[in-house]
Image 1 (tube, rainbow, N blue to C red):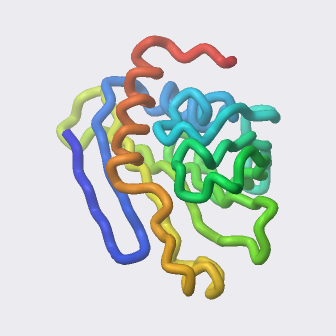
Image 2: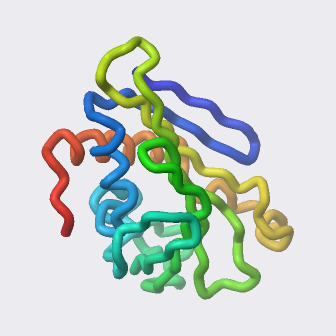
Length: 168
């Protein structure tokens, strides 16, 4: 089961996973989990401990050359700051980097019980740039990631959870 929803400033795509929400959520709270499931190739490594509350942070080591849209950016670090965290239900974050002004886009996942009643979890990935800084809006470069990239990451997340995610 997959569903998609897009607007001019938000992308959502969902996938039913044959796994309990707690197993999926454990990957999403772990900085290394973000690296393990990234479909863009930009996330190269992470430093920090698994997050447990809004306001928690970790560092992601990025490589923009993977997208080849701004290869001059090369390698850089960003700080992921958790915006919303409801165990086994919701996690979202913003990305703070070296660019000024800060961008203000939000990524996240919503987890819900399978609407058809299985033991699985309906996982929705979202990417929202509705509150980005006006300077970035004027550049016309959003969305940076496509719906297909979000869908691919959901596929990798599903595979990672089914195989039994091990941190690291």
